[in-house]
Length: 378
Image (cartoon, rainbow, N blue to C red):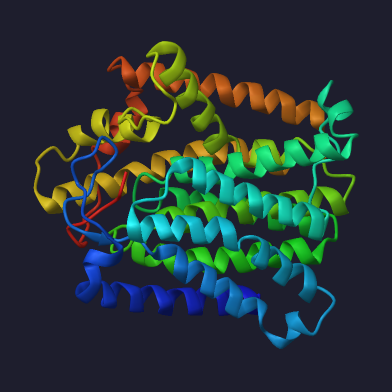
């Protein structure tokens, strides 16, 4: 708990300073593009929120109880390995000139470092064929790098509205902490709690008003953090099913896979081409807009903040079964299938203007919101 509080306090303070500084340096680290297909904000907003999260975590891990304890080398090792993933995203946030392939490459470097230095490797999958592949060091390295980079990129994909990605990551970390403490792994549990504190220190400034964005640096680092803690949990606790991390992160992972299928197969477009028809974008445009339909800055901010809770609930549909069945690969596999069916069914209903009544009912009861007239980057 001290790590959670320390990480929250530092992240909260650093994020506030970044917001204040952005008034004088908005041209350096703010998002001025409001016209892209994934843009839903109306004013320039700083994109350096990941810096507060990283500094919050680092400050918590530098406490004497961590540095001088048996966890110090591993805890600081995970932070050090995540630097390439975070730095590549932060440079993109500032310069807007780092291509996605380079960000993915940097995340792959981070995963490779953790593989060799921390033994954070996929060595079992409970999936026929893949278990044979990961029995070789090269196969294990390949699948580990693909998995970590994929989760980091998927968190960046869902970073579409105020509080969406950050709260989903907090939910995942809470589940990781719960299972870790269930199996007696205080290291992973404590690092997950520290991550929650750092994320919440950013979240209070991001939701609902969108005063600062997570940015690519924050999204890639948080995806890396969740992925590496998951791998450490599996490596240290053989009783945890290897399908647990997959189901835990399945909302952003499936969103990414479905987007690739939608672009390449259905629309014959490169998978890297941005568009505005992610599930979260559809909920914003075809569900929430009917509740708050005008184009004023206040209404747009309200629409943005009202979108994220629907996706938090969707995230919970994979996280809750993962927590309940963390030891059973059979149950986790069934939950993976059910989530995929729910996601696809919900997507096709909304894309065909047949949104579920319960969603429309919730959207027509907006709560009063006083917030800054700016919101999310995608």
